[in-house]
Image (tube, rainbow over all chains, first blue to last red; front, side, top):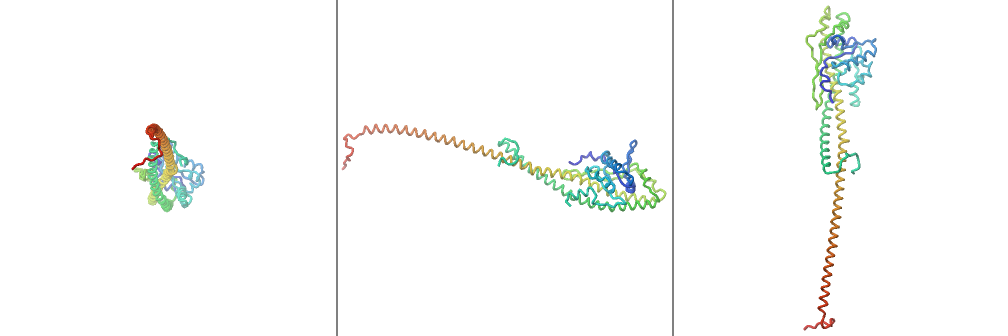
Length: 124
Length: 256
């Protein structure tokens, strides 16, 4: 039923997909982690207007499926909007996916995948 | 009665009736327990959804404050520090560990943030100017991330509980609408079959005893007849012997 302890025992990092300001802020808080060489994987991705959706999707994929050490994935809501179908179909418990507001895009509860599910469950 | 609805393939014996009764009782107990579990989980679930709603609102405010403090840093440092920070991030200082919380047999993970000691990546950031702002910004963001971690544990609990409640409800419904009616049908079937056997047996016994009675009666009659015959013969003989010697049977004896 519930996920076994082994599924989240090793998960200790947060991952961020966001615009530059958000990522900078999160890194200042100290969530940034670069895995040791040779692979040098970062646990954050800076997205700007020039980043294409496939890059975001690849990062999303990497953070949610490949890496087993990420507990929480933070993603800016306006970026989540760009890969909405992926976010909608993501239902696993780990890592937990959190949509966060960014500086230029205020938080809109109507778009949040989880809140949508909450609404659906309570039939609103 | 016995033919309606699905039932299990059993032989209608008293033993299997006993077995079915036990099964029905077990199913009812299980149903009660699961129902209670589902209710407890749903209560918890509602509480969590309410808290998620609150936490999401709080997150909006906190992130706004954090973004503002970052803007202050940019202003104070007098340039973009994003690139510098992205390059100097090496080891996570802010990490989470997971604890477990048990809600009626379901383990809900809870994230707990902690500072990994001995790592300070941004010691040199804002060295020239704006060091104070950078420091403040780090604190603000750390607080914001803590809020996010809290929200993330709520959300994970939400996802897991959602799944578990679905499973439990499915079980409750399966027991309520499939297993219990089927077992009841089986019991009915066995009962009706047993009753029929009983009736058959009763009828058979009645037949047998009727036949016996008839036989006995016939025998009795025969015996009676045989006896009567015997008596008759005797009586006739006697009668023949005790004929009126005078030969005038019609005349009454005159008695004074």
